[in-house]
Each structure stands twice: as structure tokens, then as C-alpha cells.
Amino acid sequence: MSPEYHYQPTRAQISRTSIQRLYIAMKHLFMRGAYKPLGISGETIIDSLLALKPEIYGSIADPEKVELDGLLYIFQRLPLGIEQCNYIKLISREGYENSHFEKYVPPRRVRNCYRIDAEQMYIEMTRGGSDVYDILTHLTFMYIEAEKIRRNGIDIKERKNKSWTMLESIVLSMEEGKDINRDLGLTCLNTLLGRTYSEVLNAYERFEKSEGVNNLFLITYWLGKLSMEEYFESKDREISFSPALRENLGHHLYGESWATNIKKTMYKHGLIDRPVHIISANLHSVMNCFFAKAVLYKEIQKNEIGPYAEILSQSGQGQLRQKVKEFAVKNGMIELSDTSGTNIGVQIFDLNKIDPSFLPDDLTYVKKEKENAPVIIVMDYAFGEQAYETMDELLKPYTLENESKKFLDIKSINIMGKAGILEGIKGDIMIPNAHVFEGSADNYPFVNALNNDHFRDCGLHVYEGTMITVLGTSLQNKDILTYFMKSSWKAIGLEMEGAHYQKAIQSASKIRKSIHPDVTLRYAYYASDNPLETGSTLASGSLGLDGVKPTYLITIEMLKGCLS
Image (cartoon, rainbow, N blue to C red; front, side, top):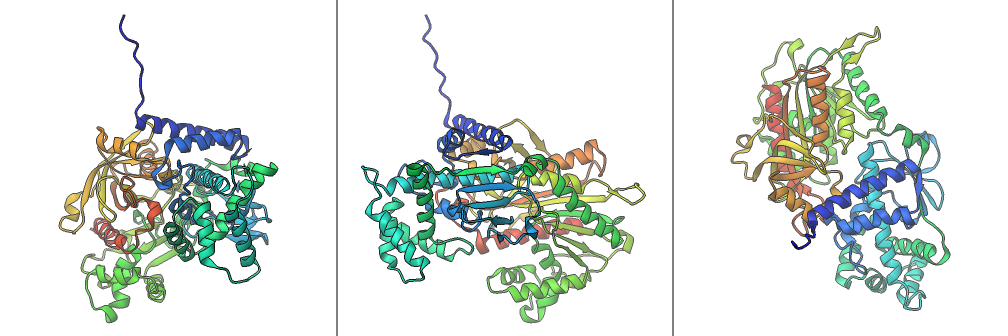
């Protein structure tokens, strides 16, 4: 008899299964309407996240060590004071902006959040499914770390230990406005967080410098307090989803309103029949490329965009940036503030009104007849599935009052984004030739009008190949990423929007015929992190000024194509 064969899945396969299980569980709980994070349903998500051990959450699987970088990362994306709330409710836009509840907007993820009372926080979800799953992942991580604090705060007889009672007195003193002994407090955190004094001190200082985030004493206390209340007093914590959110998700309500406003504005300004180029990027680099030199030449006296970009990107230069924006609005830029709920700002540039002498030497533009002068729509970064919703709606024709359709003359679509790189370092450039959906065989090859030659001798490494569009950047670990890089996919990086954009573009050009089937595509990403390199994940901090050079290199190459 032949020996029995026992199949042993690889770590990458186990991780992939964990991600699928996470999303299935989240979708099930979302449809159900509510769940307890520490209940049976919540434990499914916790077990999957612990099996996955995402890089961004560092020591999540360690039973004692609290992951400090990961906590700062999530609290920069969650509303201030969420650690104090037993009940968290995810809602759609339901009119709370007209209420008198205290509103919070997290510093690193623009969304409206409302503190209903001491125990309840409502969080507005208008960016689609990816946003819901992203925040559920962050909350699950928060509860896992809270359980560690509780375990570190009680002794073998399940009594609150000395470190915990000292932290309680320190927090009480803070609430009364009294001075505290910081060194004593950090020593308490040393035990409760399972970290060395140096690690705690470093984390404390990073939390202190982060706007819109409570200090480490308060966060540790409240995470541990609510966990102890549930453990000792059965005072449950709960996450719920409003009926309106469950009904509206996936119906493009916000994306349709957003896109209609753009086309309505273009129609109002007589731009609807002009050649259009769409750029998905930040809301400063295109504007600065067009106008920074004209505004700041007397002070800087340079002809290339680089020196202007560096100065405008430095902290403390808000007045200069405002000066450039005011000049732009007077000289061909229309700024649309978002009222739809997408949280995606938009700028429209009318090249007929922009004087070619404004441009740096990096760009040249020969002014055309008004009817042939390009119009450039710049949309701020979308988030995950929201990229499909917004691009799908933007590429549809505009419906006039007499019900006739006005098709946009889309000449090119340009996507610039931040992405995790798998080989290089922060600041390097990635040029994709295909996007592949994580966890499936869905793939979107395309002809990219950008290539390595556009960035030759730029001083940065440039990589060409496949990009993986992931379900969430906070769900990746080294096993999965190494597989993507070393398998026949030969992936160069990972991001969250590319395949969603490409799905919308292909359906508009190949099936709906609302845009030209051979529309020019330009995709380029710069590396915000390397999740395979310890200390270089997104949780290690922002890219800072290292992102200025690749951002403007990519912007210039995209604009060269649009203006040629």
C-alpha cells in the first residue's frame, strides 16, 4: 500500500484563507446588523486576524506585548475618544451633520464621526465596502490589544494589580487638571503594555505629537477599563450597522451625486464639449505645476518645478500654498468642495485660461483654439472599492434637462497613487502593466502610456510589472507578499484602487461605449512603504518629504501627455 498523503498548506495559503474568512465573516455580520466583538461572532474575526498576523499590526499575535506603532496607526484613522465607547455604530449620511452632537474628523481618514454620549460613537461610512471592512479590521485589532492590557493589569488571583491602580490615579489626576509624575506613569505603562521603558517613552512621544489622538495614558486606561468591565461585570461592547447603511451600500448613491456635480459644473462653464483628461492624484501637485512658478518666481527664481515643490511641501508654508491656490482660482482653476459624502475633492483646470508662460520649463504647452483647449479634471484619492463607484459614474454621459445625453470626450485617464513596494524602498516608482485582484484570478492587463524611459536618470529606482489590488493594506503579511513577488505573478507592489479603476474604465470603453475604446491610460505609483521590510510598513510613519520628488516626477510626465 502506498503511504497516506497528508497535504500541508503553505503559510501563504493559510493567510489567503484567513483573509477570505475575515471578509465572509464581516459581510455576514454586516448583513445581520450587529455583533459583540468579544462574542462568538467576533471571535471568528479575531481568530482569523491572529492567524493572518498582518505586518502593519506588528506584534498582534504576542499574548503580552501591545503593538504600539499599530495602535498609533489606527487611532490616527479612528475618531478621538473611540477607546472610551462601549457602543460603536457605523452609519451612512443620515442627517447628523445638522445635529448638535460633537463631531470628530480623524486626521488620517476624512470621515464624520459623532459622539452621541459617554458610551456611543457613530461613524459615517460613505466610501463604500472597503471603508467598512477597513474600519472593522482596525476595531478588531483595538479589541485584541485591549485584552492584552486587561491581562497585564490583573494578577494571578484576578485582582487589579499595582500598575493598574497607579494608572487609574494618574488618569484621575489628569482629569482634575493636576500635574502628574510622567516617569511614574510610563513605568506603569511599562508593565501594562508589556514593553520596555524606552519603547513606551518613544511611543508616548509619538502619540503626543499626533494631532487628533489622545495621549497614551488615556488610551491605555480606557482600553483596559472597558475590557475589565466586560470581563468582570459582563458589560458588553457592541458594533452595529444602521439600516440605512446596510440598504445604501453598493448603490453608488454618493458617487453618482459627486460625478453629476462635476459634469453639471463643466456644463455651466461651457467645458462639457472640450477634450477631457482625468487625473486621480492629490489636490496640490497639478495646481503647483501650473501656477507655483508664476506666483513664487520673484522669491525663488527657478525655472523647474522641483524647488517650488520642495518649499510648498514643507510644514509652516500654509500662507504660500494659499497664495498659489488663490492665484489658480483666478486663472483657470475651478475648485469643487465635496458635498456628496465621498470626501473626494475635485479641481477642474481650463487650459484656455492658463497662460503658457506660467508653466515651469518641465512643461510646454502651445495654446489652442478655445474649443480644442484641454480640460483637466483632478480628483483626490479614492479608497478601495470607492474607486470603481466614482470612476464608473464619472465616465457616464451627462443627462441634460431635455433627457438627451452629453458624452464626455475623454482623451486620457491618469492614475497616480501611493502603494506598497515589494523590492525597492520608500519613494521609488512603480509602473504597472496589469492589475490583479487579491484572492482571485481576476486580472486587468492594459497598455500603459508610461514606462521606464519616462523616468530615466531621475535618481530613483523604477519598477515595471504587475500590481496587486488588495482587499485591505492592513491585511497583508510577509507570506502573502513574498508569494506575490516570487510567483509567476511577479508583482512589484500592492495598492487598493487600481483594479477597481480599471474595471470601471473597461466597462465604459468596451461594453457601454460611453468613452473611446482606445482611451490613453497612464498609471504610476510611488512607494509609501515596503511591507516586507521591518520598520518600513505604513505604521512606521508617513513618507514625509521623501514623497515630494516622485509625486512631482509622475505629475509632470502625466501632464506632458495631457498637454501634448
